[in-house]
Length: 77
Image (cartoon, rainbow, N blue to C red; front, side, top):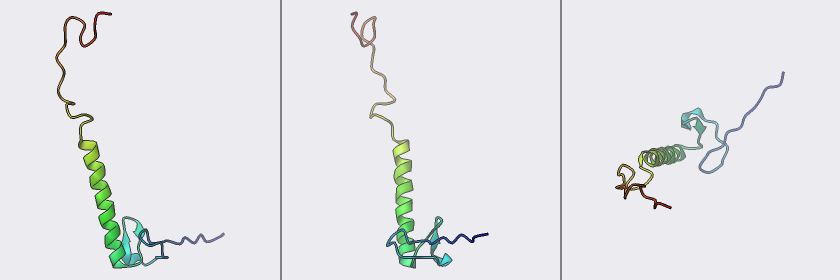
């Protein structure tokens, strides 16, 4: 049976990192400074993603335009 070895690399600088002390969100970092920087990036991405999902598709998404005539917004032809 073969033993599978996995190398982990810092997501900030790419150096080999395997110290579990600097593990954040399942990623190993090479130093405390890079671990904190990675945390800031992940939080910013999550915040941006949450804000983009909460925004309406258009500025007047909740407002309806008044109908014109019998045929709505279209003409009779």
